Length: 231
Image (tube, rainbow, N blue to C red; front, side, top):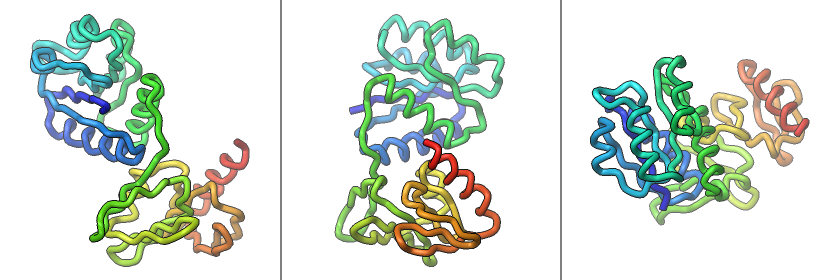
């Protein structure tokens, strides 16, 4: 099980970070446990074998850098990621071989990117899945098989190469949690850019199906498609 710790003296930031990390790890199908701490002293006192630690630099008597120094002496393999509101502080991370840093307020895409870098550092990887909760139980859907997702009132329909999974949710939440290679093309549609065959004005062809493209999404779709084709 992947062990993570979040140390921040502001509860709202601990909650936000926990939510984003949890979503990213669940999508990757990785078993995990996240433990929260409100200060460096508490983290050191209760520190156990931990894989990834998210440390706020600006805390009370014991700041994040000093906390990391003490923890580094206890665990040489732990990955440290600093959290800060001031970019001037990030250079202090070199003293404890911090892997990366994230800025407040949080950008979910940045956090997910840093998380996956940490997993690669720890040589932990897995195929990404989305857990669909239905009355009959939970279903793990491989994201590389999802062609597109569309909303219908309060329901989301996840279309794969074999079937359609329907569940309650918001398309905006899916857009944030999934990230690349999923791209918003319409207020009701999110497509996997890997399955896009052609863009034609106000429509996009995905596995033989013609889906609508709104004017506000046209440019971002074209850019995403061009980048994918160049890979």
